[in-house]
Length: 249
Length: 333
Image (spheres, rainbow over the protein chains, first blue to last red):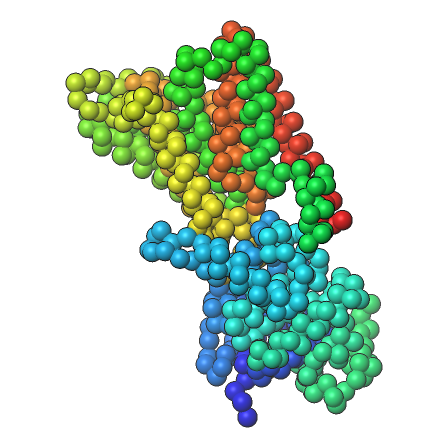
């Protein structure tokens, strides 16, 4: 049994009287894709925020590669190998694709306070990164001129480049066209080869079933189901969602 | 391959890639207008001397404003910091009889300190910097007037020894030293902006602070630094001012902030953050100075300056906006 890339145990988080997470356990193996589904308010986004360092949990344990960690900030999370790809706003739109690929991780040369950006090396590396994922965006174009799919691709390229252990994808297929969705799902599958564990959060159960190895279903801050995708179906999951968290509209 | 050759010859290739190109074009245009209007007087030795003597301090502050706008904030207190620094210099030298050199150091530090106060207030209160610096604009000046009153403070210079006047408002290699200060700072800040990680971070923070935070950038530190640089430059501008005029006037500085803001906008800096470099605000500030010097040379009432500046600001803002639309259209195809 390999060590899980990330393991969380008994994570609790409350906002006032609202108990967003009521003791959640979860683990993802390297190269495994875990789908996270649940209705709005099920606690998915709170869990993502905890794992990406934006919120601190009230209690519980997070382990990366078997080591317990404390995530005080997004910077902490990133340093420890957790990359989060948000549906929107993952890139700084005014920066070039290259600058985004290396943001916070710039290659530099020189000495001490006089270190400068090593543009030549970054250019070569970012071209390699895009080529590796067969992305067509130019490394010099500003990120806001990229399509939604390209932006997701760039975020994924960034995660691979920093050798992330876990990538969290928050609704990566939202608002994308059909072709772009296929492309993004393909990129997510590609994370397997890099041994990166992946948490795929989506409302689109079709996409989850299509790409994930395992699926976890959240209802009211608890995990209701955690099963290999091969042992369930989109229909069954939708049924379950409707039963347990529906009736609210 | 064919595709690139084709675009190279299309009209799209004429769209400037950088806003600074537009700023440069506007500067050239303004210079040409005044060449005609003043019958060449604008490039006379007298007018250039006027520009070189009084211009650098304004441009220094424009550069600072550009960086603060780049990180998505605004600094309305530049004028107050500028005057505060000149008053610290003059006040310490005159009333406390501290050595002029120490007074200069204290004045420069006061700029850094006031900028730091702005930055810390913005970052810790999370109130918009427009409000915070609107407050400190009044606050810094009020504090000064409370302590010193609205009286002009003369600085006596001893002409026989090397003193701060020679360093900040003297001459070196035939150039006013303030021009040399300006050039050194333009080059340094340009280097920081374009060649270092910090430059990229400033732009990232201004463009998308959430993404910057997610990528683990020290977004608060970057914001504080931008305000501190603005304060430091206003401090230097104040020292130059006091050295140049051998006095400090606590109740002055009116209109400086708006001029500086206008210069940054003509320099292609966006009020919404994430856009702007060092060259642009340099050119933008210079443009405004050419306008005001030009009118002086024409002997026209000062108020015309305001009208032309107004036109320049709005016209360039529109130009940048159209340019942006063109770029978007080109890239979407």
